[in-house]
Image (cartoon, rainbow, N blue to C red):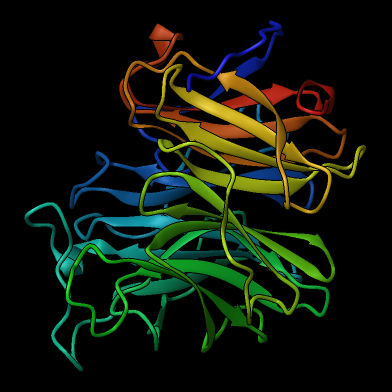
Length: 345
């Protein structure tokens, strides 16, 4: 069965975050600025790649120059980014170079051994300087790649998603999704829970103080929704929310309508970024919108969305093979600006 779309055109303002870089962006509101973490210095894979942060004081229309957060040479990638209750920026990352990349996947560490590869750093000066990296070792995963926005529970607990091969896995490409919690402002992350098997990139959002919603990439390539009412200790069964090829996703709560917004990468044509909304805490999703559809290749998407203090929505996405804005080059990170009314039915 083929889908049919009823099209209504609308103008979506775009601005450039950076060109020649910008994969895997994660946005966060940080006081009076909009902050972003993204990849710089390398392709989708590659030892020269690292992560950088930047900030904007005008809602994302202009940006500071990205500042690298870790040395190049170790394929530093896959950020989880957020703001601690005390205002510090928190950034977790995976040093993938430790695991190599051969035959289409990263290598598993030897049983009971292996160099540490997941780290958390903090900054109190908008990313100009960072704390010494603090290593995380997952009890459930052989290696743990962070993902998405670090969110804060009502009691101040920080919750972060990660994924990787479970300990003892026979296959290097068998991934499970987990959440990690910190009750000391990000200093330690030794409280973790399993979310879903055969799953990877997991975005988190508190739909209410009691309900944590996750949008997770399944092995078949669709985005599914999982929900937790105990800060991520236990989770509902997954329910598919998109078609195959529509991943990964981000989720947030809209201020005016109270609905949830899910933005997701479109690897089906038109290539770019799609959106769905939910009025029942993520149980069901409606009103599909194509926010951007001018990608020239399917290495595209990884949207991250926040609502600005003035009510406008901002979604960061990247294009690795070009977009409709030729002067920004093949690889760019772009910010979409639009009103809540565009995505709410």
